[in-house]
Image (tube, rainbow, N blue to C red; front, top):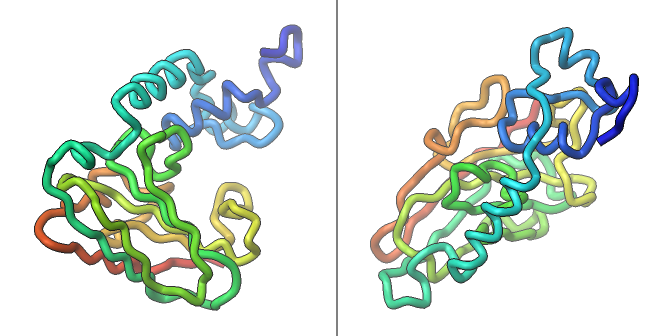
Length: 194
């Protein structure tokens, strides 16, 4: 972390880590001034805690649960509706970890798919039967990220169960669905602000 007079005002990786831990805070890009003024500065993240958590998940075998251990498995089919164009890619993240939804950044067990936007369906076969949540972006310019302006998405996004979006992404519990039986279908309607 930066020391000195400027250190408390500059955005650092630790400050950004807290944004990914909690999502309702630390929106600044370079300086913490606006976060402090608006009451959204929530301090620094804890890299040691995040790394320990990721290491613990990795030691459990790096899967999504009972797959490969004889537990019941099923298939999830995902249909993406309301795309405004066939340009770019659809990026899908499937997770069973509430702490890593919707970003899936630190989730070693998350399953991801990147498919051309002209392909509106994809499948996740062999899933353990349990609760999951989907986060989907329409990466129209194929730069492998959701482009934003002042934190507001410029590209399409969607969530399982078409969970409501208010001032930020929905909670895992709002997007959570159960996978059981032979196959499950999730139809996700994409949303665009710009």
